[in-house]
Length: 334
Ligand code: NAP
Ligand code: F7E
Image (cartoon, rainbow, N blue to C red; front, side):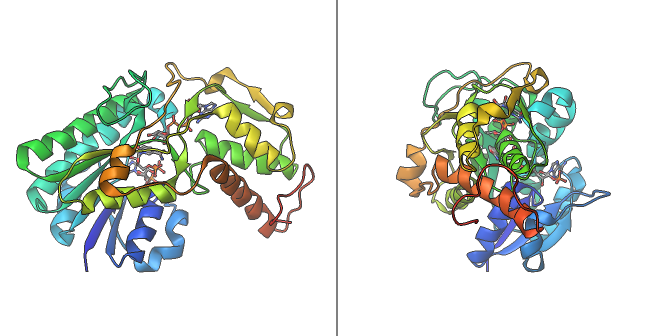
């Protein structure tokens, strides 16, 4: 039985990846950091099948100790301060965790588990003010936030350890991927949760920032399959994972509200506090390399993703016994 080690288990991707690897028969060792109020809700349904351990990307010794103890075959470094907006307010912390944290992981792997295969969660935010469209593995980077800058550092650290020490280290350049388990601060989940809250009469308004920003949004469950495939290939490399389509925040709103029979223009207001000092206006990925080399293709399309997320936020309220007061429930939830 292969052992996989995942950082970031409390996050969106950690929970989907752990599920996927358990289904493939892996022993999954999952790292979380110490917190006064630990939140295990995203993986509560599989907790008894995981080996939970405690460590922190800010603490080199904890990473060394855990890799020495578990000697994993595969290591997935998903932990990060991942919210772009927050990275403008906490640039040093973001650099420490999202940037230098990768170097700490790579050093721990080099010294304690050099034969392990390593996956780094890189990001389309590295493309930032894009040089070309669509973006692919060869597109130069121009990050537009402390988060993006930190991810570029982590990406090149991964490439450098592959080249310097012959380590099997892959960087997955993943475009936005979402799900019902997405954090409420990210725009897709903020919209889906507000659509449900508005339908149930809990609020009358959704305040957003830049409605014209465009993203290549996919489903997290599809993307964790791609992470695993990268580590199964004969050689380590870097891959873009994306859907190859792009939509605006406004379009996400339109479909999400229409799903419950409402018009987004009646509820969405723009509040400058949600704008960023520098914005990434357009992302659109070309994942043909992942398709051709790994056989990876995403299964959920944009409309399916939006509806899945709104349905989940509606269902959560329905099971609590609440009833909608506006719009109409989608067929299947009635
Ligand atoms: P997420 O939900 O924000 O999860 C981030 C995880 O990192 C959480 O488990 C968090 O733990 C953990 N973490 C934060 N600081 C840590 C530290 N100092 N030590 C150990 N763990 C720490 O992010 P996600 O959406 O699952 O994304 C997973 C990874 O992919 C991230 O690296 C993200 O930057 C990257 N990525 C995401 C996307 C996307 O669209 N989702 C796209 C490209 C790349 P706590 O719960 O304790 O905070
Ligand atoms: O913003 C705009 C905002 O915060 C998307 C992370 O997973 O994906 C994510 O980063 C867009 C931006 O995600 C609001 O200005 C408008 O243009 O959902 P987001 P992100 O910044 O794209 C990448 C690939 C990662 O790697 C990151 O870890 O939506 N927007 N109004 C808003 N965004 C938020 N959050 N809130 C708003 O009210």
